Length: 211
Image (cartoon, rainbow, N blue to C red):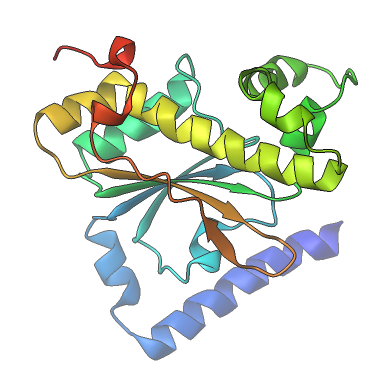
């Protein structure tokens, strides 16, 4: 345990030295501030590091992560990140990125009691309820699991568009595009679900706020 912890400190020093060797002004520029063009809402899974899988440098991606990359309208942490990203950093893109093999989505397919997280998983179960007719027709469990992951991402994209934060930005003609991706941990590739939203016209009228 102690060796692993100490190794983290050593890794940090090596990372600093590598970056300074390539660019002596690397940290000076980072310290000046951030203007990332992208907000990433992803899963907390340790196998899905936002910057690494898209080859982004420090300062290019503003990140929020939670179990199963959920966009829940009462989650003050997610909303605070979204508000700062949209209204202060002026990001141009928001990506919701799920991943195949997601443990949270898998748990939502069953009825096991896990603990406090059951309350979070319930929101994912709601997505299954919305799409049960499609999902229940898929006999192969792995294929049904993968499709559930995709549908969950698509629903989170819609839920982002429903927020007053995003709709207010669109009203002010900020150019914000919301995308849905699924990362495949088996080969490292991203599946673009082609569910990009750039205004509230794609939403049911009941969700279109009069701002």
